[in-house]
Amino acid sequence: MFMRIDHVGIACHDLEEKIAFFERTFELTVVAREVNAEQGVKEAMLHIADGEGGGSYIQLLEPLGADTPVGKFLAKRGEGVHHVAFGVPDVVRALDTIGGRGVRLLDERPRHGSMGSSIAFLHPKDVGGMLTELVQAPERQAETTPNARNADT
Ligand code: V0V
Ligand code: CO
Image (tube, rainbow, N blue to C red; front, side, top):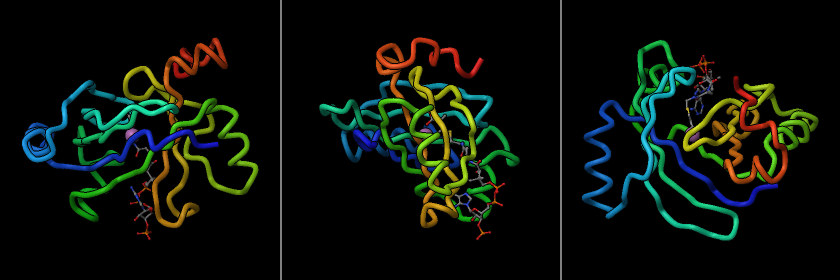
């Protein structure tokens, strides 16, 4: 079901400061930045490696406000790992299968994610305390479900 770890999402108060730290310390490069109003974040993707299943990244997340998923997480737990995202070939199919196995879906249908991806979240309480994201990369959307690219509109 999973092709790769697509990204590890890290919650932070100051995106620019954290980008500078990751670039300086780990020699990583920012390959995409986006403000995602629906998810309540300003985010940056730092490239780690490319494999057969696709690319893997660190995602740095700054909340757009206190009443957002990342804003609430920071208030409760402080900075740190917020979620782990797995690459799947078909996010609609993965949601269907995983939902059928009793895991609560936070998204019944895919949303718009970083770099043109389709994403959906699973409830952390049903995955051993880990907020879990499923990611279908845009090239995969073209391969499997021609209409998934516009699934969030
Ligand atoms: C909350 N909890 C977590 C958690 N956030 N546990 C592990 N990891 C997290 N990140 C726990 C929390 O400690 C509570 O447990 C319980 O879940 C309920 O949390 P809450 O503080 O009451 O908050 P809720 O229920 O209002 O919201 C939590 C959920 C929410 C996970 C439902 O954050 C959500 O829907 N997240 C999905 C969307 C999201 O995170 N978007 C931002 C990333 P106790 O204390 O009761 O035991 S956007 C992104 O990744 C993008 C765009 C991308 O990749 O492209
Ligand atoms: Co993410």
